[in-house]
Image (tube, rainbow, N blue to C red):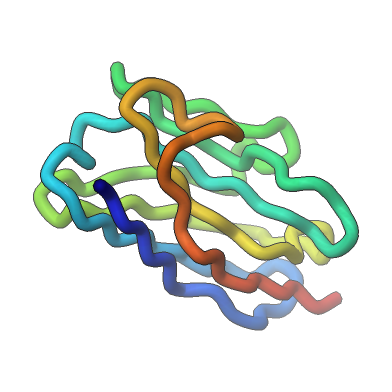
Length: 119
């Protein structure tokens, strides 16, 4: 069983930066695939970035070269560094984890953290 808790969301002006954190409990988190998803107001949840079990990173086109996903296995924590934020990045952000693929059907999800970008 893995529990995920996000933090780091908030209100920021366009062009600013935020770093989201996701702390995991559970001894197998370090080998899981992990990811960040977001759900903008009135829209469906979408992939932001992920790390495969092999360590490869994947980003949505809309965040490439602005957002960076990373993990610290010693701290059982994953991060999403978000730079040059835009109003379209406003959403609830969720971290997830899965033994296989951190996709929309991943086993474990955090509760979400709100990110609001003002213009």
